[in-house]
Length: 74
Image (cartoon, rainbow, N blue to C red; front, side, top):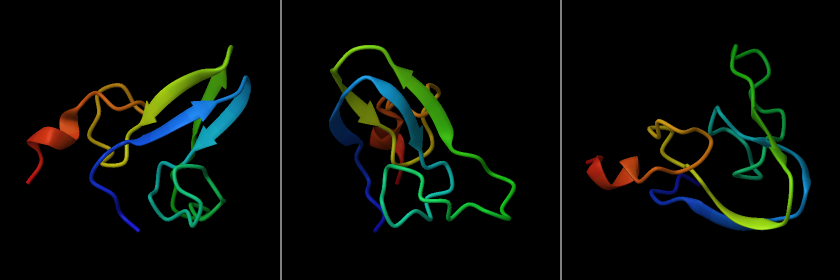
């Protein structure tokens, strides 16, 4: 389901793969649904436990993180 606001998640340290194609059934995480599309997930190294805002509109200038761009979309 498409969402118009960021996914707010408390992440533990480790490598995370966030969906870049918006086809994942496990948003905001990649589930491989992008295969054949030419797109690849956003790979992020989380160094310490922290809360992150993952962009759902794909308009952020700081992908995969939200920068508030969704507020200007119609």
